[in-house]
Image 1: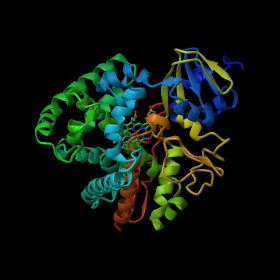
Image 2: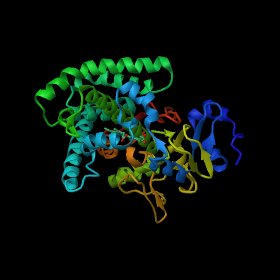
Image 3: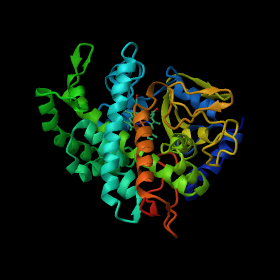
Image 4: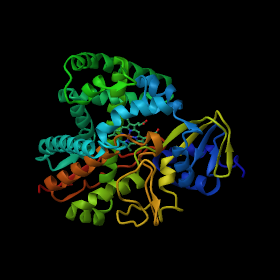
Length: 421
Ligand code: HEM
């Protein structure tokens, strides 16, 4: 298969930033595993191949993130492989979902779910009450950027009054993950500042542990040894970023899609049990995270193409979620589509009886730790908003443009008008 006739300039064009799907469609159709001659990175774009990549931990490694995630946050779960990753993940993952635990699974799951719902409802309620008197609101600024960070800050038992600082920190960490040296430096500096801020809290929880996540990290043991203070702070940096920015964008995208599809919005408003599937379809149609990169550890044959050891691949989530071999008319937002698996997400994914899972939370060992927390925040928050704001529509003349491609994709503001319920 020819791999040199696709024009790499298409990936750098401004239109790709606004809407990557037509270009990704070309790649899927003709060059499903394609090496970009400008940077040597391979794009993997078909659903089957992307899923295979996420699940193949022998051929593909996450250590590629040592240069970005670990450089900014400090030692990062996302950049670990093998045993080290499993051990560290086992400390934190049960706090969010309780999956993968044997005998204690149901108990932990129930408790984690209760915690998630409690934190989510509390944060959502506060915010709804704060802007309920205003009939015009930017839903992103007033709600979606605040709810996830408030929830994670409550879970960590840090002061909500520092909200603006948390917001600045996680946004700066995130932009620091880009290869741009200036942004990287800012990200590293912001992380050092955040670690200094965290220091007295961590010291206190080491002395007097409570029920919060920081205390759990302080008390956790790996192979009989405690995590270092640096490890604990780095974990918290990752959680703040992973839990804040992504969920923020997922909620914004869910609302943008619903507001642009008034009939489906009406269905969901009338029957809140549909919010769950609206969220799932959002994660397919406009996933906040566009793809993940991996380092090739041994020669990898995928989609009929040979990818040599040492190269870097980009597993395109946006493309997999829009693969027409898997999802009919993939560009259409349709909460009633019959080819999307709607149940609870699974690390190994789901492909049965004509229904497939979205890949918006990744797959495999690095499958998102916070998938259930994110879903709960979006679903509970949306239900409470519906109950509180009555009839809702986009503010006339204010339909924002969705933007971003490989990295984060979302609307960054969402001006709505509503009648009090
Ligand atoms: C809709 C919101 C979210 C999206 C779209 C999302 C997306 C993802 C994706 C695609 C990955 C896989 C990374 C990889 O394979 O390299 C991931 C991993 C992760 N996510 Fe999320 N995430 C969301 C919410 C959250 C929340 C709420 C938390 C926690 C509070 C969280 C914590 C994490 C962590 C810690 C990892 C790393 C897991 C590992 O490396 O083992 N995420 N997320």
